[in-house]
Length: 271
Image (cartoon, rainbow, N blue to C red):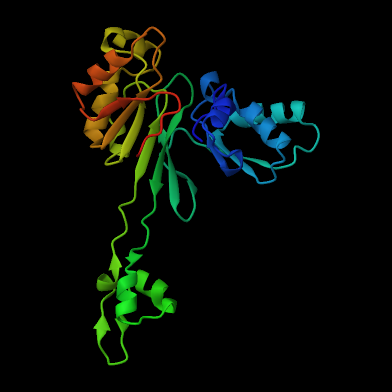
C-alpha cells in the first residue's frame, strides 16, 4: 500500500482486497490525508488476529508518532509486530527489495519532508516451451538450467540452444508514485522510462501561483514531467476541491502529454 489516509480500510473492504496480503505500507509524508488511517488499520489487523509482521516505510518523523499511538492504544500485546523502516526523503535510493521487486525513494519538494516511491519489477527468467521439451525428450530436471541460459546436449551429441527451448519473459514493469510536490524540472531524470507515472495535479494553470505557494503542481506541470521522462502512461490525482469537474485538468495535461487519465476511487489500472 502507498499512503494510508482516513478511510483506507473502508476502501480495502469495498475493493474486496485481502487484509492478510498487505505486508508493506509506504508513507510519503505526514500530512493527514496520507497517514491518518494508519493507526486504525493497524488496530483492525490486530482484531482480525494478524500474526505476520507489518512493515511501515516512512519518513523518520513518523517513528515517534507511531510509537506513541501504539503505546497509548495498545499497551497490551497487539498480536503481531509492527516494524518501522525510516526513509530518507532527501535521497534517491533503494528502500526495499525482495526476489521480484525493488522499491526506490524519490525525493520531492513539499512543505514538509516528502518522497515518492518507484516500484520496479526485477527481470524474470524466460518461459520454457513445453512442446520443445517433449520433442527432444528433455527431462524436467533440466528446466532450471535451461531457464538460466544453459543449452541441452542430446544423447547423440546434438546441442539444442536454450533460445530454441524458451520464449523471452515479459519486460519488467515500473510504476512511479509522486505524491505532493511542486514542479521539479529535474524530476524526470529519476523516472526515465517507467511504464506508469502517478503524479499529483492539485491545480490547473489558472492557479499556478497557488501551486508554487503551497508546494503543489498543476496538471500541465505533471504532464511535462511525464513527457520528459518518456513514460508510457500518466495518471493524475490529488485534485483541489475547487474543481467540481476534473476534466479541465485532464484536458490541460493532454495538451502536453496525450496518454493521460484521471484517477478515481477504486480504479484498477494496468501499469
